[in-house]
Image (cartoon, rainbow, N blue to C red; front, side):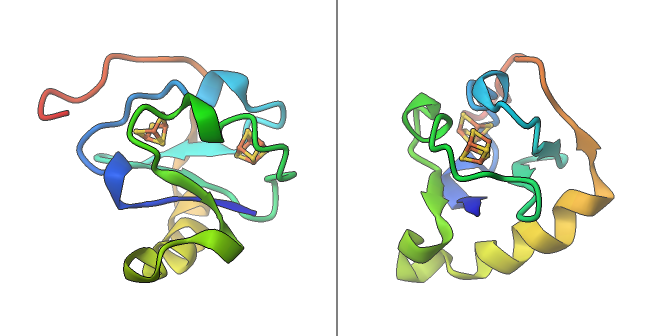
Amino acid sequence: AHVVCEPCFGCKYTDCVVVCPVECFYEGEKVLYIHPDECIDCEACVPECPVEAIFHEDNVPEDWKSWIEKNAEEAPNCEVITEKQEPLADS
Ligand code: SF4
Ligand code: F3S
């Protein structure tokens, strides 16, 4: 599965959500999460993110490894997001 990492936090550009064919992005307060059981690894979202926050789980940079578990834990507790919205102010 793909994973949303640290650079998304406080940004939430949401360019990623509109290209996902399986609608597996979920919205946290400050960040989005990808549901690992739903992501089909199509990679469509990767080039869409202006801050390069999305990685395949096997390629997550060392410092952000904890985001793999964070996405898996948090996505099921959040609402699905499929439409682009305004980025957060501090982005
Ligand atoms: Fe969706 Fe594809 Fe990105 Fe997975 S890799 S989150 S399926 S756009
Ligand atoms: Fe976050 Fe990048 Fe999507 S900042 S909301 S992962 S486009």
